[in-house]
Image 1 (tube, rainbow, N blue to C red):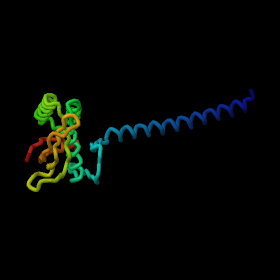
Image 2: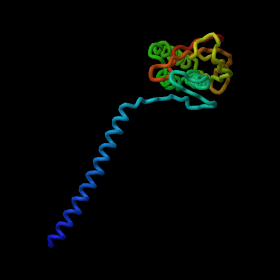
Image 3: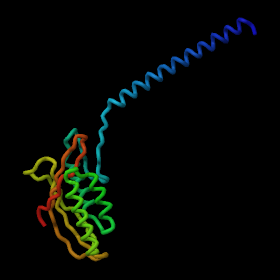
Image 4: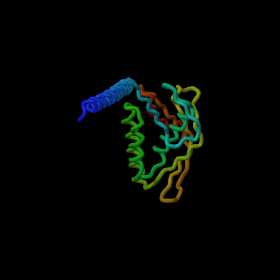
Length: 186
């Protein structure tokens, strides 16, 4: 091989090596920056009811009336649109959305409902009529008025209108957690 050609090839290989090392260095720096940004970023998780029929807004530890209403209707569906075979599954879903301090009381309520549905062989259908924020209550409270229809098989046995009050708390991560469900009128 000609010494001139050898030096040219060697010079070309060194240039390619230097370009490759430069590109690798830039990629390593970029990855380090991305890792630093990733670990400094706070995750923001927003739980949204599966069905939304109006605009909702969440800012920090405050939620819009629409969000509170949609969330209340979703929880009411989980709690009161039940059969003896679905009450436990829907109850488990509901319990994931409950404040830890209220977990025991709401779980007991679900288990009592399960026993009642099994003993009476009935199913319940809840039809909401109205959702409103009570004027005399704190901000994370919603009243829901609705009709409870009790069925045996496909036959309607009874219907009654009830009002329930749902109270929530916003945790430190911005999750809306259920505190209590109270019967206001039946």
